[in-house]
Length: 511
Image 1 (cartoon, rainbow, N blue to C red):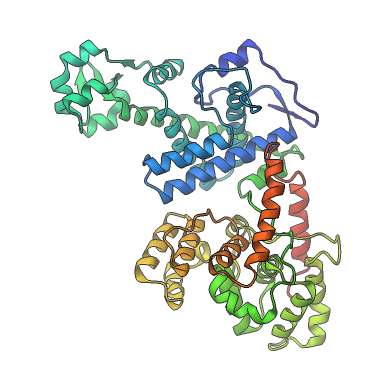
Image 2 (image 1 turned 180 degrees about the vertical axis):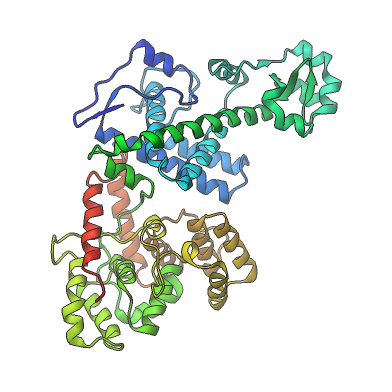
C-alpha cells in the first residue's frame, strides 16, 4: 500500500474484482494500490468507530441478542461498510457502491493492523473486536454464501444434503444439543474433518461419522472464528516486526501513534458556553455533574490547595471546556493556591503564564483541547502525590471501592463498576457511575470525554447552563452533519497536536 498527497488513482482491474468477489474475507492479501493520506485517515477513523461500537455493545448487551445485532447493523450501515452479498458497481442513492464499500473494509483493516500491532494490549483488543465483527458478518450470510466463503478460503466443509439429513435425523437429534425433528429439517449442517472441530468433539456437541463432524450452522462459526483468530494473530506479529520501516515515514508515524487512543467525538475546545458558569457554582457542579476523575481532582485541590502539573493540565482544560473564561481561571487557581504554600507573587511568576498559555494567549497562541477519556487513560499515569488520571484505570480496586462508598454509591452498583474495571472497560465503568449517580437505567450515550459527561449531566438535571449547552451541541452537530458525507478523519495535524500538548506540558512543570 502506497500513499500520496494527491487524489488516488482508482484501480479496478480483474485482480481487484477477484479480491472483492465476496462481501467477507480473511484479509489474507494486503492492498497494493495507491491511496491518498486523506483517504488513509478517513478509512482508519471509520473502522475505528465501528470497532469501538462493537466493543461497547459487547459489554452493554448480550452478544448475538436481538438488541445487540440491531445496534451493530445500524452502525455498520451508517459507516458504509459492505453489507450486500452481490457485487454492484452502481452507487446507491448517491452513496458508495458495493465495490467501494468492500475496498474500504479491506484497506481500513490493514491500516488498523499497523496501529494496533504495537503492544500486547492493543493486539488483544483489536483481535477481539475484529472477531466479534466477523461473527456478526458471518452470521447474516445465507447458507449459500457461507459455503462460498468457506470454499474460497480453502475451508472445504460441504453442506449435508437433505437426503443425508433424513437418513441421519435421529442420530443428529441425539448427539447435537438443542435439536428437534423440526430444527434438523430447518438447519444447515456441515461436514467438517473432526480434527478441525476438536473443541466441539471434546464437549460431545456434534455427531461423528467416517472421520467427519456434523456441525449445525450456528456452530460452524466457531470453527471459522478459530481459523480467523489464528491467521490474524500471526499477521499482527509479522506486522509488528516490520513496523520500524513504516514508522520511519514521517507522514504516517503521528497518524498511527494517534489512532490507538484517538478521540472521535465532539471538539470541546470550542467554547460556546464561555462565561456561563460562575466560580461560586463549581463546588455544586463538581458534586453533581463532574465525572469521577474531575471530582477527585477538585476535592484534592480544595483540600491541599495545590495540584501538580499533570492535575492542573487535566483539570484546567476541563474547566476551560465547560465555560470558564481566562479571567475566571486565573482567579480560581490563584485564590486556591494562595491558601496553601504559594503567595500571590510566586503564583503570578510561576503559574499565571501557563494558564494564559492554556487559553491560547501566550506562546503559539493555540486553543488547547480538553483531554478525552482515552488520553486520560493512556497518557501520563499518575505517580505518588498526583491526583490526575482515570480513577477506574489507575486506582487500586479497594481504594476505588472506598471512594465510591464515600459518594453513597450502592453496594450493588459498586460491584457492577468493579466488574467492568476488572474487564478493563474503564469508560463503561464511568458510564455506569453516571447512571448510578443520576438514578437512571440507561444513559443513552457512549461516554468518550469528561466534558461530554458534564454536558449530558447538565442536560439531564436541567442545570442553569442547559440551554447554552444544547445550543452549542446543536451547532456542532450541524457542522458535523455537513461534514459527515465527506468523512470525520483524524486531524491532519495530529503531529502538531501532540507537539502542542508537549509544549503546554513544559509550562506546567513544578519547581
